[in-house]
Amino acid sequence: MRTITMANGEAVEVECLSCALVNGLIEPEGGIVVETEHFHAHQDVAYPIPGLIILASKRHLKSLDELTEAERLDYITVLSKIRKAQREVLGIESVYYFYNEDTTHHFHTWMVPRYGWMYEFGRSVESVRPVLLHARNEMNDDANVKNVRQAIAALTEELKR
Image (cartoon, rainbow, N blue to C red; front, side, top):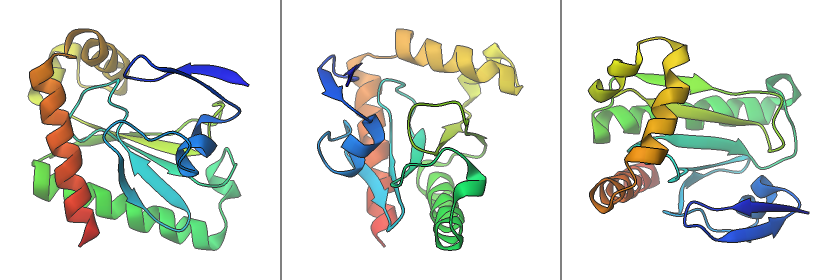
């Protein structure tokens, strides 16, 4: 078991954070944005950036090449739908996509939107970590968290269609 501190400060004991999310043992703050047979998507509100989405596999696997054919099709389909909703509903023009294979969680992709304020940290992939840290440490005020929750609701509604 590991102790995970959630965005709201609550500490939870879990074997696997992704399994706990997928199985409903832990509700991501803001809820699940979209769920398919093989994936679920949510926003990690610890990084209060409207439209930042984490798309995670429901099955334990670490690498893209471990996806079954059905999972690969589901992955690219839901990833594309989320991206379209980010553009159409939230006006997000650019997104950085990240996935890493040295994680303790399930295979997951971060979809990190790029907003104008972020360019003070640079325009390359190297700027993303400072952006995330800035958001987590400096943008957790009530107004911004409210914007994030509104973005989650808007994306969730759009992806239900």
